[in-house]
Length: 337
Image 1 (cartoon, rainbow, N blue to C red):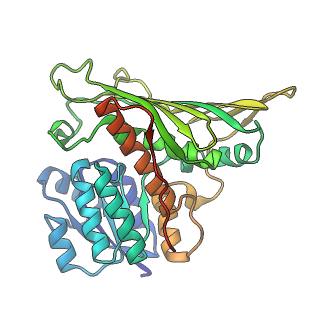
Image 2: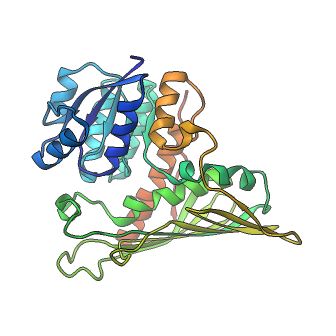
Image 3: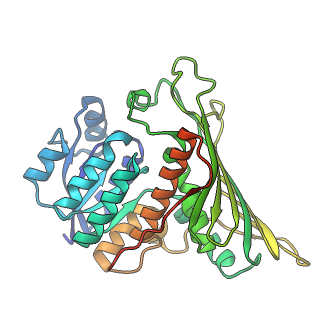
């Protein structure tokens, strides 16, 4: 066994895909799982035939020797768990979002650097749409100057875990969802976000949870001046799909990307399409790529520094929406490795 994995928290369905990958990979072993709520423990034990032995991340960290901690706690508790794991010298892979405060993010960045540990995050678009990246990175539509991205979601109220609606546990819709799109834009443009020009959030259409944010919008600027608009929501009608869509305009053409692939239109040329999948098997899921990094040492599709930069961007966008501040600067994260 090359990599020993422990899991803290089973509170979101995203952890199921991670567990499946871990249990099927002969290079790794799941050595311990912690979860404090019976409903989540029972579901995973029945689905995978594994034992959930611990009820807190503290118990797990004190009792088990392992290399990588997978974190899928309620959003508001993730930062603390990630920080505690890094302090003990463990690599961390978290469901998104990584944490819910900028203070936590800077602690995570500092500890990752100090302890020489990697931090991975379940941001999926860069992986699910991996084959769309190279044409854009190679300038097929010229320099990308404008992006509009839309991430509609189905709330499934009544089946959604109750912690989503508890004070302090969700942390805001922009920090919850927008990271997928931000990370993809950073990747295809090679540019980070330097400013939140404006941002807003709304609690609408769900009177039984009047303080839950189910709509968020942010206007961002990249370091070359390009404009990025993002809209995310939990307003998709029940029974319908909710695909991400990204529209990009370049100096020599434009492109539209969604779950089916990319339609690229270059000035004076015929329209072309590209499939959206991952050309390498390890890129098919962020966790598979992260395991490959730790076991094989190969360059991942997303580095720890990129993970932290995307997380910082969505945290600052959420703060801007909460405070109605405009033109908020986003500093660069640099690791000294």
